[in-house]
Image (cartoon, rainbow, N blue to C red; front, side, top):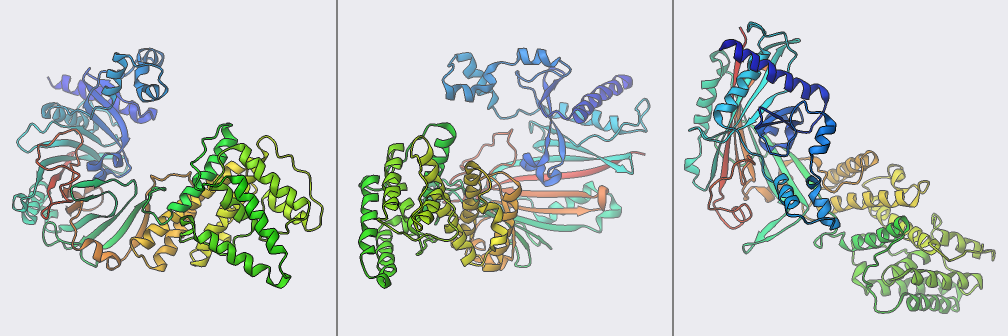
Length: 606
């Protein structure tokens, strides 16, 4: 019997070791019905508390389409159905077969747990394989932590079992054994475990010599901005701003974080939401992106025009306005033109923006008119033809900013000397010229705000303002700059953050986007003082509240924690509850919380 157990432990170790060494993250099966995979702990909420982004092994009930361990790769490719790409196939309309639909549905199922007995067996094999004191067990290198999904069939309601090695030097000296127990949501605070009961649970699991040095830490997360419930109706938002608090000296369960806490904002902002102060600028950016996509793909889906007049008529009227202005005395030329420009722009809501400028030059004013009215390539060509002819015949002598870099700006500079290069307004050339005009104008809009608010300097914007890269890359960098401003204005408008925090956030975003691709799902972090947002959270309920009791030091530290959350932290169990996630904390004075407790014990190898 003992040799059989050792043999099973060795086999289990070898499979885990191969997953660890090969660097593959695709799942495999073990003993026909167990799925094993390697992932990062921060991808699973309940494990993130202990593992962070550390690599871990996950064991769960196998799905039928998961390949078996040690099968040849070409055989796996043959046996894997194309239905696993069901989402893409459905989008393309390639097939609608019933068996493919079933397979696509299967890939979306939540992970399934193993029985408590099987989970304990896997943990015992993991522990035996790491214990050099057990006969016939070699001095194996340490494995990643192992976590097993459980079906909560035991009296404690265990949802996870975990094990991780403890090392002294290069030698494994023991393992930490974890258990995660869960309870469904309740509004009855009296049914929750008390702080004293949590301490007693910790003492029961830790070594007596270290229990008298217990440390207690609190944590909480509040939602400051995101999806909200108004009169039992969920208003969804892709943007969210949450704040994480951490503090010591916890006195009671669900206590409000003290002002001495450390606080970190987690900022994720999606562009294009109507409540954003940048919404009008976003619409302008979308038109710019339409032009860029047209140059890249050869196809353009034109946006609905914002003006009833045609692009050509708007351009003609603009040129006639300039010609009439030119007939006035020279010392009165600039002022009337500026007055007319501001009036015409302010009449339209598109200019009612925090980034509104009063110094739009000729090219920028032309861009504004064209981008609100253009609906075809022909429109662009006809409008630019009118402008180039007016320049060539000296009908207009418009002013432009010195640092303008578009092709049309260069033609205007040449017109000052009555030497204009011939431009063939055929093919994609007009689109190319209009895209340059928009890039020039919007870059100045963003610079005007960032520099005007003293949030950065031109030196720090060089990457975003460079015209040495192709137009597609310029558009990407402009989108990054737009996203940065969405973030800054969200924190300024909705949270009222002071200048020093906005300055720090601006620098962080600028530095991030110099290295990383555009990503609206990225969470930007910002340290703040709790007093700055106390009016947001002190009368609100947390979405997550936690307390942790710990003792010991370093690798031998033992922790016992409790997490109370507005939704379950375990994704493989369906909890019975009378409360829905969307309305539980939106329309109830007493919120419902799911309870998750993580206990840890240290097993030393003699």
